[in-house]
Length: 235
Ligand code: APR
Ligand code: ZN
Image 1 (cartoon, rainbow, N blue to C red):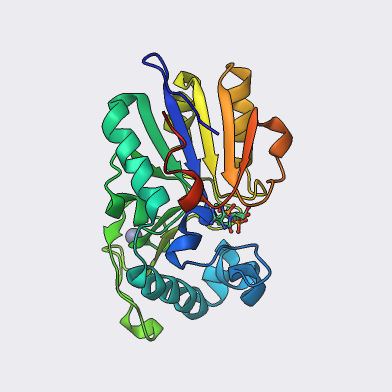
Image 2: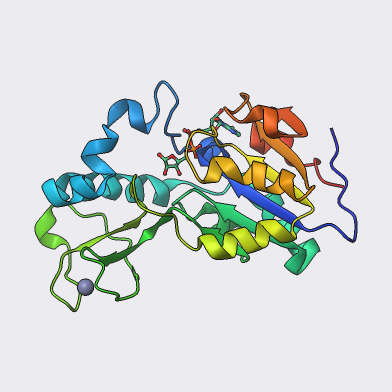
């Protein structure tokens, strides 16, 4: 299949864990995925952070170590090249917390679920996130915010509101085409983006090896691995 992008098109791309699968990073909901080996409520909720910050940091330190080993794959590179071609008619929103999109060259990029390479105040005093790629071996190594609170991973936990939703909604309103890659369609509000795009009359395409939960909302579903399907998909 070919998706032709015309001079009047504005493309909004949403990616999920599947786009990094071919880089060797596990997805969340596969039978051998991250949520098969860890309980969400132990490592990825505000309650987990209060109850056992050591376990939360252990989980995200492991993600940092794994992320540092991974390299962008052809799917990340195709999206960076598409941005080069389209300029400000392109926007990339990722649910991923890895940095493979930026390492492939993407710049018009928003991490709606946070970033592994950052930490922020564990009590959200208002200080902005800071760069932090440390793989912590124990909780005592974790630094403190200027307010004294322990730093937490700059990750949107379950039950928290994704980052920069206003900007995301504005970009979706402008889009004539939405391309969604490698996400199971099970986490909201990201799973709703396709519906918002459709309401504005945009074409909507999904790329991934399995049909997502919200598959029926797409005008096209292209079944295959992102690294194989994306090169050559856009004309
Ligand atoms: N190419 C494209 N898609 C793939 C590939 C691949 N090579 N391999 C797997 N996939 C697809 C799977 O078919 C699945 O639909 O990637 C999707 C991964 O789904 P999830 O594990 O649910 O990951 P995601 O949708 O990104 O999760 C959303 O859930 O836990 C939270 O905050 C976390 O951002 C994450 C959110
Ligand atoms: Zn603080």
